[in-house]
Every structure is written in C-alpha cells, then in structure tokens.
Amino acid sequence: MIKIVLLLLGLILLLVQRYIIAIDTNAQFFIFIVGILLLGVPHGAADLLVATRNADSAERMFSKKYFFIDYLGRLVLFAGMLFLFPVAGNFLFIFFAAYHFGETDLYQFKTNTLPGKLFVISYGLLILSVILLHHFDDVKPIYQLFESGKQNQGIINWISQNRYYLLSVIGILFFTSTFIYFLKNRHLDNSDKGQFLVRFAFILFILFNIPMLLGFTFYFVVWHSLLSLNNIVSYLRKKNTFSYTVIAKQILLYSILAIAGIGLFGVTGFMFINKNAVAGYIFLGLAVLTAPHMKIMYDMYEAVRQKKDTVLN
Image (cartoon, rainbow, N blue to C red; front, top):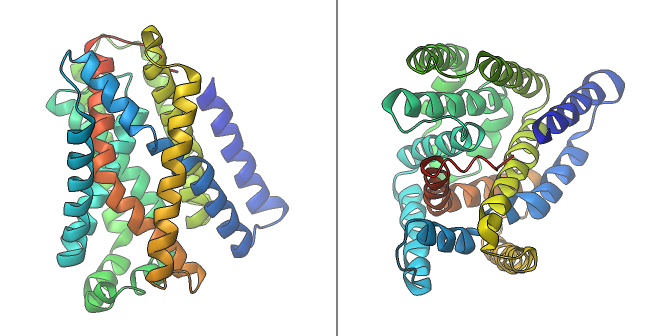
C-alpha cells in the first residue's frame, strides 16, 4: 500500500510540474533541502540500532566501540578515495548507491545468487541513469564546481555526448538480467512479477519527465528514504527488540549530529555560496555516508531473507 501511495504522489508531482504550474528551481531546491533534512538524513540515523539488531539476529556479540571504529573508518576511507581518485570514487559511489537502491526495492526477492545480484545492481543502475544521464545538463555544473571535475572535463564531455547510448546499454542490462532472474525463479507468482514491473515502469516514467533535482528528491528522499525507514522500524520492532520511543530518540539524536556535522564542514569549506555548491556538497556527503550505511543495510536485508521475515511492508 505504501508504494502505491508514493507512486500517486510522484504522479501528482509530475502532473503539477508538466501541466499545471512548473515548479521553479528555487522551489525545487527548497523541497530538496527540506526533504534531505526531514527524511534523507534520518533514514540513515538508525544505523547503530540496526547494527545491534543484526548482531542479535546473527547471534554474535555487539561492540559499540567496534561499530563506531568500523563505521567511521569506512567513511574516512571512502572520503579519501573520492579525494585522491575522484573518477574511480564516483563510479564506485554509483555502484554502491545502485546496489543499495536495488536491494531496498527488491528485498522481497531472493537475490543472494549471481542472477539475483545482477538483477539488483541493474535495477539501481537504471534508476540512477534516468536521473543523472537523462538530465546530465543539470548534473555537469555540479561536477564542474570541484577541481577534480575541471581536471576531468574530457570524461564529463564524453559522458554527455554518449549518455543515451549508456542509458540504452544499462536498460538492456536490466531487462536481460530481469528475464534471466525470473526464468531461474519460476516459482515466483506472476502477479507479483507483474506488479513489480508496472511499479518500476511508473517510477521510470516519473523520473524521466521531471527535472533532475525533483527526480532525485522523489526517488531518494520520498521513495527510498520512506521505504527504508518503514523497513528499518519493522525490523527493529520484530520481537519488540526496540520500542518506538528508543527508535525515535536514536533517529533524532544522530540526525541532529549528522546535520550539525554537515553544516560545520559546509561553512568551513565555503560550500554554501550558491545552490549548485550546496547540492554538490550534499551529494558528496551522501556519497561518503553510503559506504558504511550500505554495509549495515546489506546485513539487515540478509537477515530478513535468511529468516524469511516477510512482515516488512
């Protein structure tokens, strides 16, 4: 039901943007920032509780000290890679984000086989490709704010010139991997497969027809973050492991800390000089946070699939 409601919201957004009154760039930026603060950041703020629950599910000891060392270590390591090897770091971020998006949307499928992994990654890649490649003219100015973007202008221009070829290849990869996955999993209900494909078609249609910033806001902030929060709360509430009060307090605390940290680094790094700079800084922050967050969510969905915990959604 929640997915149907979110799709309806996306279609209403598309209808307003295309046929009623176009949302100007200032309003789009405001919606994006508010969404990141209210949903984007909080959906990763429960990582400590999720990691605790993962350890309990796997029947192993949990060390909060080790958690923070590992979490911050992954964060610093990936930040260093983005700084030292920006091109490789950006491609790795896209791979991580694509897998994370696919894993969240497809958690109800058994995807721990090679065809399943290809299904997941191709799903997320197609989502990101429609957001970024189709609207690459809006993406280029953000990359060009950074010194690495200026130094790799040739790569950026090549992507711009060949974006629809790349999008086509990724689309073919998705449909091929989906066909192979469904072929090897004949036990899946045809109605479930049909509903999945219809929902995905609507998501792509919405993302293709609204501006990049609105598209990213719809998919990451609204769709992905809300579904993730819903799944996280259901997972943490299983067997009453954590109360709603504990979950809410943890999310609020670490959201405030994350927002304060983002604000501090942004001000000291002069990242708030214009809208593109702010958007670029937020995307960079999301890239850095993806590495530790993805690992925790991967463990959560593995636990869900292994124990056939189908109460989510």
